[in-house]
Image (cartoon, rainbow, N blue to C red; front, side):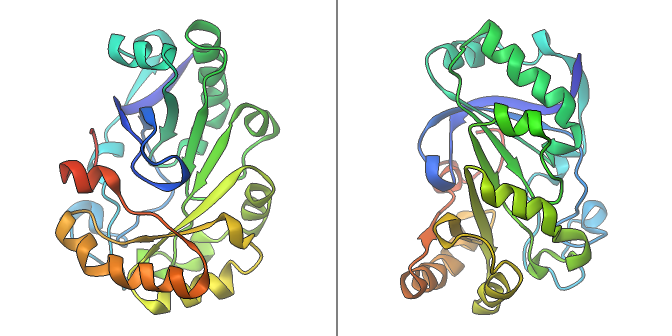
Length: 240
């Protein structure tokens, strides 16, 4: 079987509850959203009221269908055998969830039966029953209006409800206090102990502008804060 892959690399997790964990990233091609607003994929600018832009557009828009045994290099296989997590990201990996399920089984059968698998998703596609049993952790990043996308595309109530029942963290990109108010209203049914707030930005400079405000919101609301460790270390968005 094949899946459409954009990039694969071994690094450490930079966001959320497993920040700092050695991890093999498998970034899949394709997404059903365009964060930054429609048109950002062509000119790199912000549209439709967006205050931030997906930092992996240029990567996930280019992919190649690969057979499972050609996806991981020696470094990644060695890392998995030595206990590194596998993080399947995108784009939106659940667009390929049937084949992703087979890929997870392939990894566990051939490299590490106890491999801890994380899926990074925007929460708009409900994971099927097989995926629910195979995935250890869901890193869901629902998109707010600051993404430049309309709520009719970004908020799928049934999918969010299913993810809320699983081992999921919900990570929201915050630029202003208004963004958190949107979290409070649109995503009020999410368990508060699953919510993480993350400053917007794809460079050290951009993150530094918003992280204090986000930290202050987390303190006031008793919520969890996550930075973007890979940017703090390498000042790069993908591939590190």
